[in-house]
Amino acid sequence: MAAKWGDPVMVRVGDRDVRCSNPERPYFPEVGLRKIDVVDYYRAVSEVMLRQVRDRPTTLERWPTGVLPGVTLTQRDGTKGAAFYQKRVPQGAPDYVQTCRIAFPSGRTADEVTPTERAVLVWLATLGTITMHPWPVRCDEPDTPDELRLDFDPQPGTTFDDAVEVAQHARVLLAEWGWRAFPKTSGGRGVHVYVRIQRRWSFTDVRHAAIAIGRELGRRMPDRVTTNWWKEERGETVFVDYNQNARDRTIAAPWSVRARPAATVSCPVTWDELSGCRPGDFTVRTVPERVLTHDDPWADIDSAAYDLTPALDLYARDERDHGLGDMPYPPEYPKMPGEPKRVQPSRRVPRSEEK
Image (tube, rainbow, N blue to C red; front, side):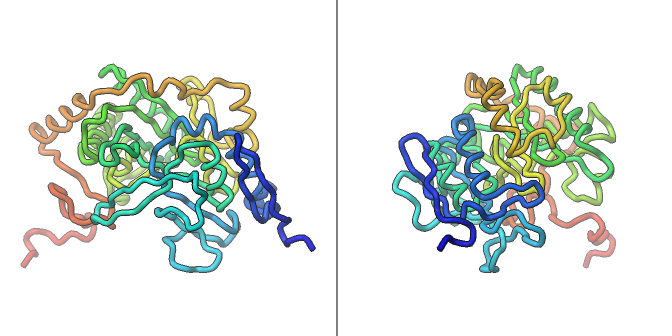
């Protein structure tokens, strides 16, 4: 008697067979996609995706019962049917799945999956991994980032087009330093821009560089760009989420599916394409054909690694000349050196009332 969602099938990836159970389970019911459709998607894009995630410790966003109405994403707490983030390698991993030990801000460590071949990406998909979140490091130097990641997040009252415009201005700024940047859609309303950097700086340095870039964009686009961490201070702007460069904060991988009803993809694009595309253009159904018929827009991303000094000099000037120092970390972080008080403005006690 067949299983409820179909008997297991073997998916051929190179010279490996990857087992997929429950292949007929609905995964994105609003667009008629099954689990096997997501697995086949990752097989179709595995070659181009591996160029970006190879040797990177990767956090897993798992939706084992699919992206269904009422299913929510939580920290792993044992809730039946819930989606969850997984930082440690899943039990029962095949012997070809390699790991990398990473350290969290708390000082604790974990052995995370580190993709080294196409079959690993497909195997992760068979576990219900919808989105893969690689660290901005390679496993041989897990404490030294090789990517600067700029996340342009439209706030209420702004749109994807606003994020595109800010990203285009960021491209101009980075080009002034001789840097070549690579854009992708977030899979939602935002835009991500990546720059390969030399492996010489800490997570703190890279985060400071992102803060400096965000502040400079705010000066060039007044009232349209913000680095304010507290939502109540952002207004109708595009937020430059500098904390995406903090240790243990990650962004959806290039070519990764997003857990949204339309099964959108965080898709690398050219700068010309970015100005004319819509987030819904890139989905599990459309991206495999794009991979077959278009050149990889990020094929040259490893051709140069840039010196972060211009951005760090800008951060230092802002601190020296304008009194603009560090900014708040995410709430789950321990108090970090140089960080201001982590209290949202509306809850701060005026100095005159402090005891």
